[in-house]
Length: 224
Image (tube, rainbow, N blue to C red; front, side):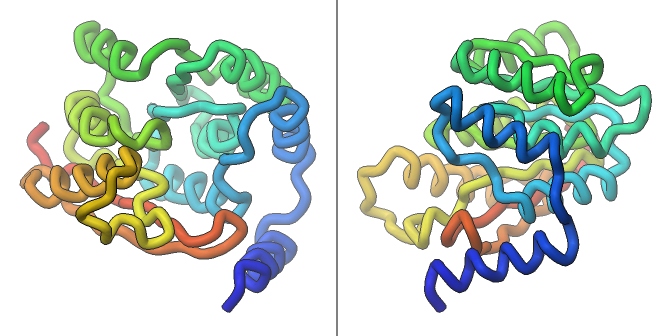
């Protein structure tokens, strides 16, 4: 099947199961106007993250990689009234756009955007004893995936759900000789998860508007 067919199926899913969404549509428009790269999760993937967070009963969510806040809004919608979400973004301009989008969606009071290198932010959170987080979504620079995984374990608890995006890379994950740092970082992630007895994990391939990629899904068995 062609990429066009994959996108058509995504459109069918959205039409039947998700529908129009003014706040999310406005976020994508603002992202484009702000010059942000069009690398957000798709609507179907965003709804999947929302449902996974609800299934996990998440009250405290951590997101590594905010971009313009599209996935952040999906995750914030899964929170109960007293829930909160911390999201980490390297670029101050991206964070500014995200703040506007999150405010328009009505979640300014629940979402804490922290700007700077995510490793530094995560180290500070660990040192401060923040957490535990119930649900952690990792969608940032791929060479740092293993470091983000280790931080997720430090900030999680038994039962924490961890989701990592972009782990198939159109099959590039199979290339052991790749000099692409994103592929090397993704392969290192698989190796780290496979060697980690505290995690029960799988990965799923996806096709659609975002072409051929996938998610790694893990639950912390504990103890952390």
